[in-house]
Image (cartoon, rainbow, N blue to C red; front, side, top):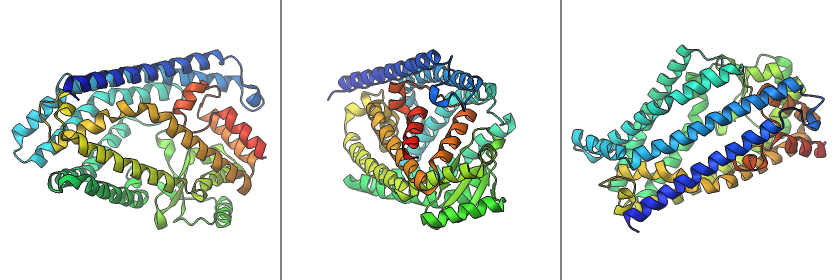
Length: 415
């Protein structure tokens, strides 16, 4: 393949992908707007029209914002590649550092900082305009900046040594470097999952043991029935940033924790909380986390092997606006343009995720009560302003959870 052919292939994939995303958002906007005037019959008794219209307006605002963001990201990718910005960063890095690893590290860090700076206004607008307009944002500008500083420092402390090690392996381990990099990445991922609950998450949020003894006892009884062992049940101060409610498991092995947002505990009754927890335990029982990890590790192994084949091809670099290749440049370009060529597989990942959600719901219906999970979901749809009327094609492509009407209908059939 020549550089011009690969460049044409890249531009075609980027254009088609961008148009597809914009078209799907356009369908979502039209569908939600068309059903804004009336609450779906399944929810007419539980969700007021005012709440339904608020959810519709929230979805419309997010979709329009995403359309702008999609176009900007596509243009930014063109500027980085075809306009030669990454090539300029590469030349500047090699001008300052003689060591290939140091120059490669400087290239990746320079790109990451520039990209973060250019996309920061979108995060600011989403947080302080859209989220604030619909009553979800609680984060102050000061806390927003502190989070940004903490996350940047954390990324530097963890990411820089990891990237340096990966570049060293790519330089020193010959043709099978991709296998060594994969093993390193797998080990790092598992380590990060082990230390995240106790070392990383507390840097951003406060985690307190659940104080409601009656609820705690009910939760412990449910955990025993389901054969789940954890290092504790904690409440996270999610309300200091957002009014959205959530619950999740985190960690691996003995470090597993159950975490409830404080906003969720205020929204739901005890029976509903147990039903939501039973759903999360369904993911544990069906080994969904382990299956996702296995799939992720397998896909990454294949991608690193593919990178090992591409990094020796001059057309790969030249087709993306780069004069000369290097290990760092190959790594950066590959993962930068990978989404351009893999967007067609997104519906498959969404379908697999929705399938697992149905399995977890079925498990929850056995361990708790389907009606309690239904009422909990209805409250979460209402309070989180989740649209009840998404476009079918849009939800098929993007949704990792089943649409509200389909999910509730499935739960009722289990009741």
